Image (cartoon, rainbow, N blue to C red; front, side, top):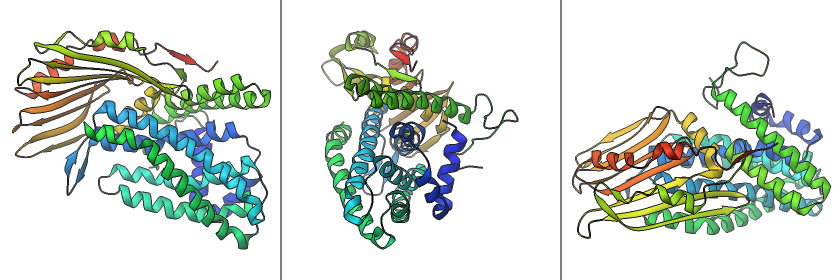
Length: 422
């Protein structure tokens, strides 16, 4: 997939939708092509922004104060929300297709997916504004309002409904979308409950002086082009599997597609529990390990593994360690690290909090002088995260605890379980 074509299409549908919708409607497309060449890339934007906002930069609330989700928790929520967002797009596509005859339109699944995908573009792109603290709600409202306008404008072209029935078609589709996302929200509620219980819009893409459509080597644009190529390869496999009628081939193709979307290069299997658990040391800062657990969870062919342990002297000193193998999410983590470029630091009478990058790794530390407690987190090899939290004499103790984890051993496994879409 040509990243320049994606940017041109997004720009066209946002800035000149009346001219762009007829072109979109006439284009020959496939379900796999739309997902691989457009949806999975733009749908990742709000996920990345949310991850950066909640787990890297942190958020503030005038009632609750500032908070930041641990990296491991933020990554889990990111992968789940991304999967559900893609599912939501497809479910809404089925609804828009089914409603077509009711409003004098023609049933066509590919055209229905075009309708949903390009209407969603406003929300996906507007989410970038959410990286600025306090503007998340404004970005969401702006994306929603303009998305409704795009949907109403596009239905007569894609679904061939009479223009006078477009508004009714839009209203009913939105009601259906509300129901779909209410169900998705309920499905994601356990993850959030668990979490809190504990030059161009893309900014910096530039073309090199080489061949047309190429980006400077090592730039974000070049990385995106490589990423998009993997997605296109996966989408071609999905198209072939759909034509074959082989259910097993379809399931494997979907798995490859999701793996390419999140892993950036194909299907990724996270480390099995018995491989990641040994990275939990027997002692941490002199405290013996009192409890340990490891698990691997999967959905739609995507996996994420986590090992956690408690270290305690049985009295007042206790530390928590969480090691996460982002597995299928490693490509998303890599983009977060590459796009982040974010440094944040705040300090008050109680302590301080800061996020920064060192040698290409995202690092976050937080310390409360009054409670003599804090947390220290680091992302290793764009795949593994190490988070230590609890009471200590200083933040240096938490840094030393994190340093005692075999990070180089984890980094050596960064390509384990990664298979390309060949």
